[in-house]
Image (cartoon, rainbow, N blue to C red; front, side):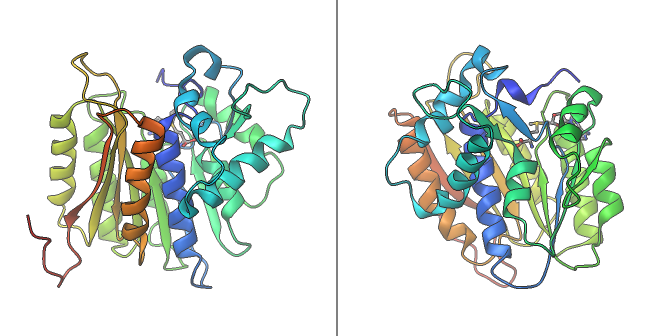
Length: 296
Ligand SMILES: C[S@@+](CC[C@H](N)C(=O)[O-])C[C@H]1O[C@@H](n2cnc3c(N)ncnc32)[C@H](O)[C@@H]1O
């Protein structure tokens, strides 16, 4: 396990993933019934972009592009508010770059910030080194349950939740060859135990064959309604395995979520990517049962 998210924090993939998380939470919070969030791959919880981020500067083509914008779309308002509030907590002691951000919240921090008092948040991080940071980030916070364990195992143990409502964020590092298999198997298991949960799986776009195979593997589970929010920030690169974008597969998308992402995804491609190769689409992988499949 070599992956350390600090090198990628705040990059375009985080923007898509964290904006997706914020919008899923907003949709689920529209009902007053509490829900459970399981973040299977938590990372450190928060990142100093002056640390590992200063090596790769990936955040510059992500949150660094977003923050200076005067009027971001409504679907980014919650997410940007959480980022600004998190950064502000550290005060003005740190020198900030021109893009105006130095500390960036990871998925557990974003979920924690948007959690209502009766909702529950459980986060797993398997890498002991990263788990130290995660535990430190939330030390003394009773509103989050931090576990140093395998996120897929955690998922098995938590479903079905007593709340009967759950959002599962699966954000693997895709380091190992069997990562896709493990993630898809975890979703399969999750759906068998709790078919009405919302499952959100992040995936990298480096190679369209990989993306196609992942989509097909999810479709083969015969899940309930499933969409893929697919955002390519640049043209497919002839350089093998270069990250050109990322996607989120969302099973059981809440009401109106797909419409929100149909507006947001192209906006992100145009405003963060912005070159001629940037494209985005929200694909229906599995239509709502009983609904007619889209044409074409
Ligand atoms: C992409 S990062 C997570 C970033 C985080 N979700 C965020 O958005 O801020 C993936 C993390 O998963 C951890 N990890 C890898 N395999 C895991 C597993 N089986 N269970 C839990 N965590 C794992 C890695 O150590 C790494 O910190």
